[in-house]
Length: 77
Image 1 (cartoon, rainbow, N blue to C red):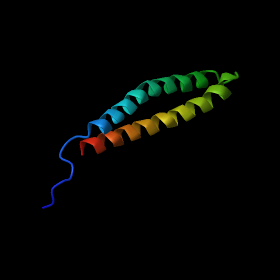
Image 2: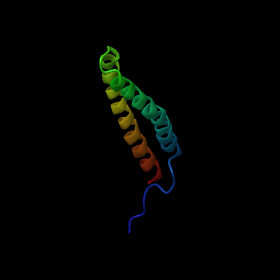
Image 3: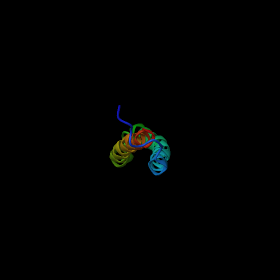
Image 4: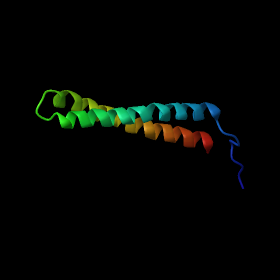
C-alpha cells in the first residue's frame, strides 16, 4: 500500500482558508441586508442601484465560501 505524501496539516493553507471564511461571513450578512433593502424600495431609485450591487456581492460571497472550504479541506487532507 502506498504511503501518503503529506502526513501533517499544511498550516499556511489552513490559515488562508479560515481568513476567506472569516471574510465571507460578514459579507453574507451585508449582502442579505442590501438585497432586502433593494426589494423594500421597489418604486424608488435604490432598487436599480442596490439590486445589481447585492447580486454581485452575493456571487462573490458564494465564491469565497467555496474557495475557503476547498482550501481548508486541501490543508487537512
